[in-house]
Length: 426
Ligand SMILES: Cc1ncc(COP(=O)(O)O)c(C=O)c1O
Image (tube, rainbow, N blue to C red; front, side):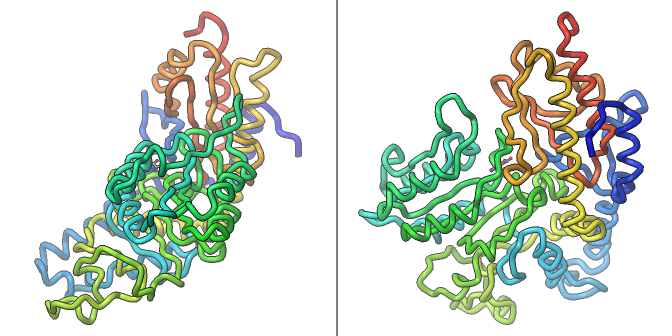
């Protein structure tokens, strides 16, 4: 069906959307008494209305039982994480035992690199995308230095071809092949934070394995945003944050994946702590560590139960909507966003959409490079009730997420942008 550029048409799409009412399950910022169009789910997802109740239950357990809340009450904290993993399997494309909820994203990347980046004199390189998220770059640099190598030699970045923003799968695979048996680890994002490009994780993993290297992914912008099948793709490990698309709150507890085939590998180095100990031994306070025989064995410290509660609340909303339904709506929303943007970008091209239009090569985020007055245009959006975000030097990122964004909001964004792009408006 051909789309139309009108408010009435966008509202009609909302009426036909069976997930439309889910937006009422979230708090959203208001401006002048009106709900804003919040397109920042790629940065911090909105607060589900059930989150406070879930956290309150933990507070009550703490008030009523003190430390015994770990073992007493209707939902003892010691098993609380068991609520989480089943809700994540379809989102992450993993088996329950391959998932652990712990720490924060950069910390988890480091912990997993301790296991999966064990360089030798011959095989010591990390292959990654150029302009990876800075925290990842710092992690790569510090890991390489920790092992006594020179980052300039050990870190190989794959660049887009000159004059383009996207990195082709072909280029990634040929760089991996060219570096062959010097590659220890291939570590890409699932979706690049700046361009919104989704990488072909299955092909990258296969190429890494063919070179004799491990393949890991930073799924910060992929988890809850695109279809993942980490287990089937044979990915070795992955880490993600839960505060973006997974709406689990600022500084939310993060997640990690370790493929089943590594779970009982005694030779794989791993930093250990008591929370990774098998539950039956954890409180015996013995000297020997007995691995939990699941990805939980990478967990080290006491789980922050209030953070788990916020995570659980959000995952329950995902489960109620159905992740595959959400992905279908996400595609419809972002396709309408592309349509409206292409509509307002003619006859004169006032911006370039960096993100691939093909929905198989992206999630919901669309990154728009504005040709003139970019920052002034961006600064005017929020006072007009449109929350997007800014990336230097000229990019506005918008992420219409299926749980709480509407087709109407997409129309409002495009229409507002069109007005701001007309000369003398900002
Ligand atoms: C792609 C990517 N990697 C890593 C991080 C850092 O995450 P954290 O601060 O949770 O360690 C972020 C944060 O936004 C990110 O977007």
